[in-house]
Length: 136
Image (cartoon, rainbow, N blue to C red; front, side):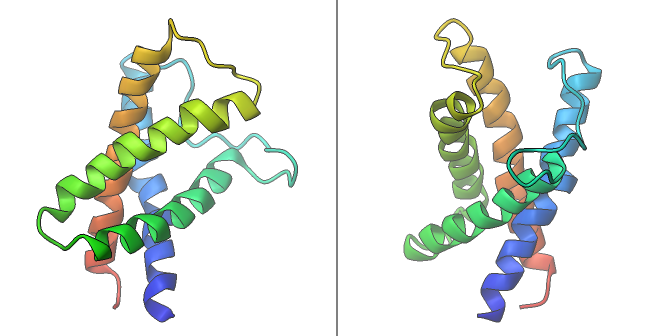
């Protein structure tokens, strides 16, 4: 049980230290129009957006590690990057964005996928970094 708490914490922290930092770099480069560490309240609970994202980062870390444990530890960095980059990005584009009223625009799909892949792949790598350095 304690291991899974640390996995959640690793995914939570990876949002702040990897995902949001990469978002900040992309924002500074003019690639994305929105800044990182968004403190705007989210519905329905009114928590800051970045905290909500970090919470879901922790939940996705549990899913990722449960799947990676089942397929072995070889090339874990690549598997974590691909899980984050592909799975999380597809869920965001196909489920989260439509639920938030952002719709599904085929014209924007390639750009959104590339940006999402970069951010979420770095989250996956960051989660593994934290899993390796946090207590076991």
